Image 1: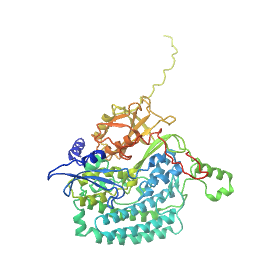
Image 2: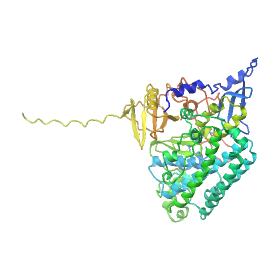
Image 3: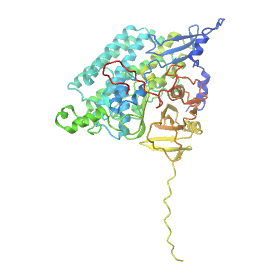
Image 4: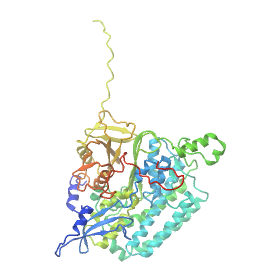
Length: 423
Length: 173
């Protein structure tokens, strides 16, 4: 075991993070500094084709080499946590789902799980399996988005369209189930919003049969290509010590060789009943992160095949009348059903006072929800621990000493989604 | 000797549970510690030595409008609470620390020297709640613009509705 006490000292000695406020940087630009060894502080972003959303990077350059850097965020901040304090628990999923907009089911899931923990209820088994199915399909679509953008950033322009094409097939499956391609508001406290449609098995099987061939094509296009390997191997290296010190989780942590995956190590839903491998890298570089995500798609395909076999029949949401709205048809027949429907959709259901932290393994790392309730029908405090927020802290360490062109590769390999960074 | 009737002794109160000097509450499977402001860094350091090798989150809650939360005996109730979450990968366990921070003096020592990953999270707590972390390397706003006034997630900060000019539309909630 490495010496935990010396880690932070080494982190500080690394001096990778440029701690300069915006006003300081602005005034520095006005000074005339002569000399060959002059370093330049330039901005990358927030509007930039390669910064994965509105990420601004302040880079201190010496020639082409990056010395120190600082990610500046907040350009997509829309006060979602404050909004979360105004919406009822039934509406809460519509808000949280838009944080990590590429992998939206995970946000809904973590919020619903936290609410259910406070309520002390457990959704029925079929609901849990449906949630697992949608989350794993969402992991596939999120990683396909990563493969597309990673390819484009490094020059494999056609990869962009291939990834998008595959992802769109998955999104059209989501549309059949939830009604929306993205930001579905499908996983709600108590279960899921509607049951899977007829013919869903055929649709999922069609996708599962079609995807592995395409993934092999990506192996030909990228994994084995010398240009790809030159551009990603040895670039953006992080060590497991750095990851532990910075709170970095997900594929980045796994690329350093640490086999930590919440689905395996702290299982939730029914992940302990399915077989899958946790993909681990060895060098902590961009190539490892690319390969991990590519293979995680294969593992998710494996999990979905098992879910197809193990999916039970039953209710798709808990029958507790206080939490679950009644089926629409019953509203015509029963006054009680009408009243329940009205109360749940206007005032919302009340959640007992308490606080809870629930975390799951999203496509980007540990996604957590810290929920504080005061006994009313809206959360008192809803905090979403977005993995990309903490993963971005590893960026200065990846960029230090590299070239600007490698910065593009590193940012892409971190795969940040600014929605969950800024909220 | 005559048998003297003695009043039964009151049941001894169970000792409040402490861990590393901080009061503990076990809620729904989670272990929550309540260190004081002065003990905060020391408790985190002991936990880190005990195998809690990653910081998951540092966040805060403003309890201004809360009707009343359950705190263990001996914890001084304040307006703000800073919540820190640590993870032990070896034991597969998380621990939560809730530190009470008064509104009159919203300061807390930083965890940056123990866990550099707390840097961005503490900046967000400062930005959203106005709690200053002493010895933090870069105590500036992270989400809001640098020159913003006010701390948005405080309960006395308005939600911010923009009135819309439509005939018959409801006004600000």
